[in-house]
Image 1: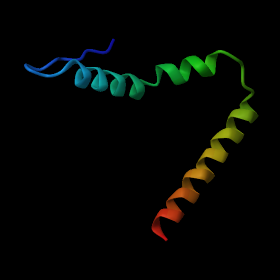
Image 2 (image 1 turned 90 degrees about the horizontal axis):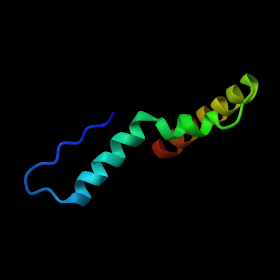
Image 3 (image 1 turned 90 degrees about the vertical axis):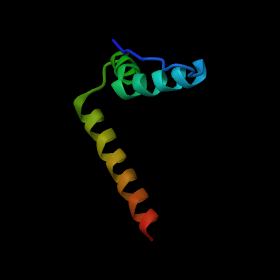
Image 4 (image 1 turned 45 degrees about the horizontal axis):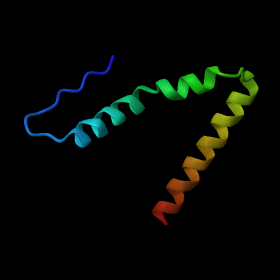
Length: 64
């Protein structure tokens, strides 16, 4: 359960933005989408490897 304390004088938009950030960090939506359809372990591993390669390439481009 996500709890957001609204400070005095804080706008509702800012509080909603903080809630969305916290909700995204929990990974609930990502897990829900992944559970909608079964994914074989080999496919999941391949996806992780592709993502890792992508991140590594992005880091290398950022340093150059």
